[in-house]
Length: 454
Image (tube, rainbow, N blue to C red; front, side, top):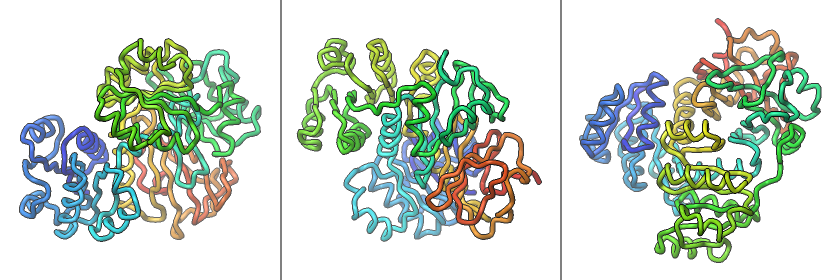
């Protein structure tokens, strides 16, 4: 497909990298020559130094023939205007980055319709939702939810001496009555889609597909604390922090925000009223953290604009035995280093957005018999979890899964049928109307039929 991206910042560059891996033709439009030069030096893309809202510039970029037009500049208004102009010129689908919370109201539906924008993405809000899901299951390093909310993919690290250390997957399924499936394992630098004889070992990072109702129960039986984090400190009053604070307050958690900019503190106090405690101070200060009770927290989330600060604050919180520590880390190399040193949970808003747009591109590129509803990149991009909506023309509907000749590295991990959540066995069938979750390693799946050998 032909994809035009307006805005070559952190989010734009991550989307470009992801779309190139998907083998799409990518064109960048940005009005900063240094940004265009940097991106075209790093990636095999065409770069145009221009304003992404002007008619002539969009025509030069080929917006009239674009399959997907994505605007991710720092301005919501410019993004929406770019998408509107591109759609009028002839772009098939348009996506705008919209960060201002004022647009996430009923008025947004009206604006989206009038501007003919296919989808809006808010990296900060998406990041807050991802963090909130982890804080509900703090033993997990990552939690991915699927559209029907029937299933969650929970990533955990196998602890030495835990109830699952050294057990085969067959024995695990026999031992516990809850519905779950260990569907992907990372051991050092290798990633596996395991079979029943696979034995999990301490230090492994495993992805467990579990029904929403059984998530807390199965973690507890695995030997992991299942208590939801309720006493939470946020370092840095970013947009992500404000979205997260709203969610936590609604969930009746105690929230304390530490922010060093007095003007930002005033804005946060006005926004959150008296529902959260706001402290004007430097989150890098050991004295302030101790004074504000870091050693009695359930969780700390570091959300400043500097990766290095977030990492250092997080390691200090770990030294004070904080049960759950989460850090915003945008640079992939720093994320890998910090995780190897013991910081189990890091996240990057730009990577979350890239996953969503890769999913969207696959959905519009091929929807024969099924449609990609959800896509998550797992374990550094070495595997994927995809959710497909099965349509009436799916050619293998009603065939038992054990009779489907699937490609290596493919696992059917979950089926949602109406209100029922199934961890499928060999005798189960996929039916039209189902939502089917597939975990894949080494395969780019655009529709459900791609899981089969041809």
